[in-house]
Image 1 (cartoon, rainbow, N blue to C red):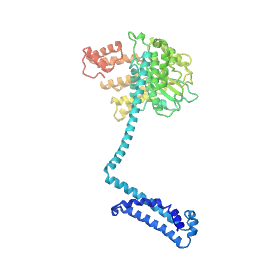
Image 2: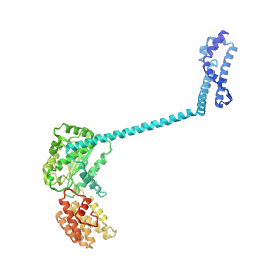
Image 3: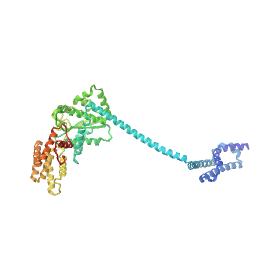
Image 4: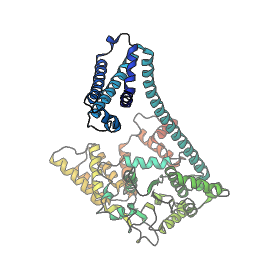
Length: 528
């Protein structure tokens, strides 16, 4: 009997701990109220326990007890007696019971203790709130970092402007001129340079990785042939090409359009060419923090920097501002328009800059585009250039069609109107050599002729004369205006010419309107 109980104790080492959990039901006063699923699980565990007991009773009654007693450990691990299967079923039923019991306990707690349920709900909401707070804090931090970065950048730019002797808003005249030119482009024009097959010299310049490319490119043409318009289109072409595009090098794009002005009293002290180079440097600093920091440091190390930079020549500035040698892994584009339109009083500085550009290394990653009527001196033949007059016929024809439509001239679809539009287009394009001023003047004269019920012969005469020099055209137009304008309009025009020629600055339409009022000249029609 002692041996039997000893073996039985070893046997129940497997199932004893699992059965102990059922003592909880001794304290359950209303067993009938237990959930049905949990009751079924308890019953299955009890049935499985009875099956285990039955196996051992069967072993004892068949006389196999002594053999079983000596191999208890093996029996528990093998299936030759049925014990292993019975124990496996028992473990599975106990596991299922535990799972159902835990679920029922959680349900009971949540139903009977609203505080726990509320706590869990609040915990879930808190987790969401913490997540939102974390996101908001990150957003605020990024915004603050951006604000600090912009503040630091602005302070650095202001410091550079002081060193270079530049005034706030000094770049706006150039940018306004460039934007106005671009905004005034007639649809479908000013894009001929994008044709790779017809203009390989442009694409060789813009694609710096080309071994045959040259860092300097000229856009040549006579006055009023649309060079500035094309230059503004090239600037926007560069920005659209490189903006956001994946590049092996950082790309910086700068431009300066020299405003048109006549020399007035006090202008002798102005240095427009040197000022242009300084504004190019400011644009580079605005796009490249590394360049900006190094330039500030260079200014701080330079003794009496402000005086030196105020008096520096173009050659000094070109070298000090590193306009010929970008930072590593950087390519910079410098677009200069209107340099040859400066008054003769600034010729020395202009020629100095042209000489610098003539010696600009062809392999440099500082790509320079200059519009000129020509490139004086030796080296002109070795410098890649585009003659705008050879490529502007199609654009000029579209410009004429646009102006005729804008003024509602010969827009009917009858044969006469179609023939007149074609005659005017071909007559102007074939005679003015790409000169937009001459084309615009001819169109003005045609409009005046139409308004005065002139004849077809008058149009033919205008087309014959449209290739006259600008002075002759201006005289003809003035004579026509004198015959057309009223006395008070001539008085207005004379006053406006005084302000335009002798004024201390270039005035806007609104400012000229105010000038007329100040001079006690009142007009009803808008000045525009």
